[in-house]
Image (cartoon, rainbow, N blue to C red; front, side, top):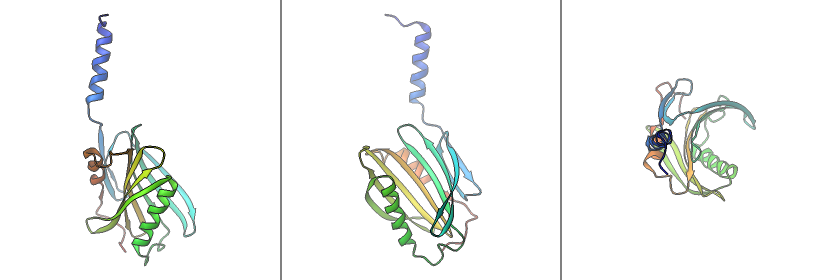
Length: 178
């Protein structure tokens, strides 16, 4: 059967869309004091949650690509609640809590620095999903930043994933570091 011109055009359009790279936007967030090259479209969400240290404001920028998720978030803790605390303690607690919430097994936690800001990189295998999460967290003042990729197992080192993770930059107007 010979395809009609309309069917041929549809096939070519689908082929071109599937071969074109995912469009990404460099998002500069003055309030969050960061920039990141995140795939489009990205959705912004803001919420508050009560914790033992007080109310935490959570701002999240998420791209759900269907087969993967790219996310940047920052949590603003009450003023002074992280001052004087050992960052290693809350990074390790953050990684453990994140693994529990995602029903994941931590594969590795390693120190990771972004300029002069200390952080952690965590790789987790999501149980029962054949998926992996690679995330980086940084604490600056009373703010905890996170940049995360979730996708199929084995994709955590793909060039596109590393490009996204490495594109995260902290801005010039940062809160005071510990």
